[in-house]
Length: 374
Image 1: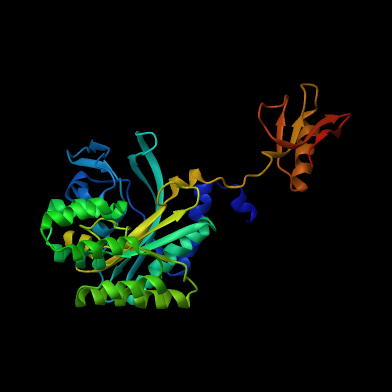
Image 2: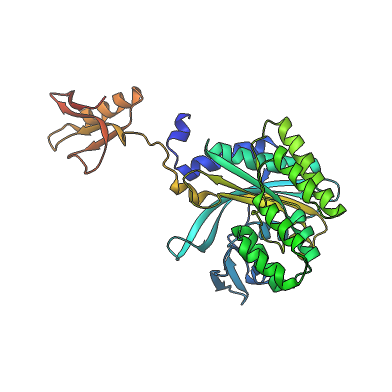
């Protein structure tokens, strides 16, 4: 870690590292307003993590909202380009109710969006950047990947109504096999589809073992195509030495907006997913866009759970002085300590809880060491 990074807070340090990473792949920063018209969020309420939105009336009478989400703003404001893939990243604050305190919080979020004619390369690039983002935050992470198309192939065969579909997606996310069996019985379909669905969510692990099992339980050509797409993705990831990404079909980000690949990232010591994303062509279409899109967000506020190693001292030198001390001598002493590369705090008494490496005072015009913790 360089000296500049050492003075940053965890969230600021993470933003700096991730920004370097995204720009190294040609992503440019997307800046946006803190406000959006409330109507944007009402029309896409299912995409939001929470219904609670801070609103206010603008001077022209429009109902506005402090943005609870970034992706919707980017989709709304970005101009579609049929020739090129648009690659943007962001580091923005969003305003949501905290799960911990149940009060509104300003939360820092960073992430990226890749918008246009998305092909295999760009799917793999975004997955790779998501994995590298986790790697930039911690050495102890898990990256879990799923495919909405594979899950949907089985659900379509079950011919579920909307309420059943909503329930079964929840049960898949919870790996609740009893709940899945109950819904499948309600459909009156044979038990085989229920068994296949339970096998699907029970099959977890590296691609080379999971993909072979998927081929055995595949029910139709469409599902074969999705499995083949996953196989192609893992072949590319292998070229980048990212073979440790796990397949886990309990990862089911919003079914009404995501299609294709979806993924989540977890870091040891943080109780919920710190990264979430996937391909969201359905959301693009719902917002009147023709392009495909894939992206992810990193929830930097969750880094507070990490016990980053901290500097053992708040300051290198605590310099004590009195009302009798010559201010010119005091100033020269601080300059001299700074020349030696040390941080200095000047006080008349020792502040409570301050951790210092050396305690010094000025005596007879010279520095005198009173205490050293080297």
